[in-house]
Amino acid sequence: MKIAILAAATALALTSTAADAAVDIYVSQTSGGVLMQVIGTLDLTGLVSTGVQRTSGNTVRGRDNAFLFVGQAGQTIEGYTGFTGPSIFGSQLNTSTSGGTGTAFGFNTGFTPMQIFLPLGFVSGGAVNSAATYTFLTIASMELIVGNYTYTSAADSISLHIGQAAPSAVPEPASWAMMVAGFGLLGAAMRRRTTVRFAKG
Image (cartoon, rainbow, N blue to C red; front, side):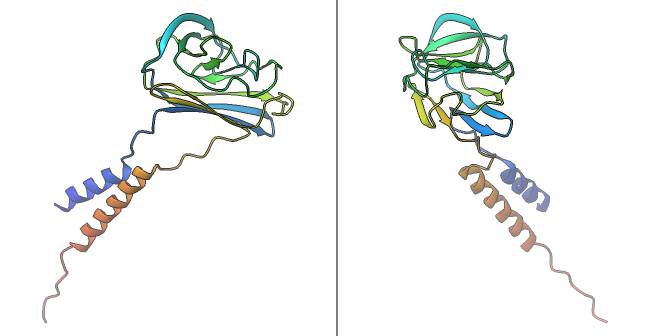
């Protein structure tokens, strides 16, 4: 019985819930340059594939056909419509870098309507996790405007955070609740231990 209680408590303590479907793009200043990180999951419900395909790379421009692409270069990516949001987050300066890792991801507000781009065959609800570093550059030299920009679809959102680093991973509120419940069960199991009795001399 005690073993079963301990096992259940451990399972509760270690169980976490899935994060809300959303993608966050962080553009932060580091000692080596400007770091772009894309983190999250994306629900394609309500989006329409345009059939537009291109090869992925790492490049950004903040206005007049504004776009941002992050991830491993050379992947085939496909366009989708269904998102809306701000068309300006910097200047007309084009900046590119040869480095990039992870899921190819991007968006272009110059299309009417705007398009987001994902790897060919991307599955709805799948993870997006990518990064690129613009070595020796600054957010100012790339002429990007510090701030938060949100793009939304019927089922999801993409948030661009310029001037903000990606947060460290922390448990979600629901995870904290499960951990507390798990520790409570551990305490209950310990209190139910059999009392040690000493033989009378």
